[in-house]
Image (tube, rainbow, N blue to C red; front, side, top):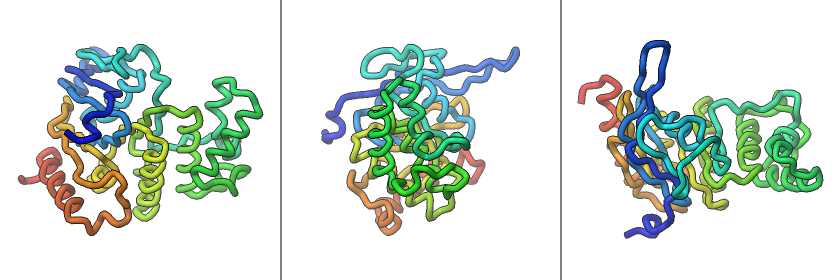
Length: 264
């Protein structure tokens, strides 16, 4: 048994299904999801559009409740918003009238943290994400990568133990995406975060993941739960030449091809 397999379970899905109503029409987004997410894991989620990948994050965050089955967090059913998670989507949602420092401080203000403590925490975070020289800049003055770093710092501000990331780097160019993947990977390891990461990018799923969950088409369910055969301290930039990385990427293309309407 691997060391990772012996670590505590943080999130557990058992027989989970979610059905939405659109007028008189019922749409089953997910069905029969059974999986455990362990402490400190980065678990990536792949699958065709509309298969319930984001629904899985929303169930973990407590923004949705399952129609069938149970979702638990550290053994307790999730009831209401799960304050032990932090959520980041493709849009950075930075407030344009606030500086970098003031954007990062938003969750701390909401929690009522005293001004002095808030200032110290923001200073720590801007150093962590490499934005110390841009604390007084506004979002319109930042590059795409800097905006992502600011959004990541805001996500980390109240120190959630689990990060829920829904295609956060999808809009970035290839070089910037790899840089942000590297920074996220290093930060999650350094801070010992548990991560659920939704992506449509096979290379990204393999580069970041300790495990990769592959979803079927709607109603989505997990058809493959794959251990990624790469070291936990991997160097993202060097992976493109790694045979294990190349082989798993190729295997995932084969698995996903039928859902993309390709001959298999």
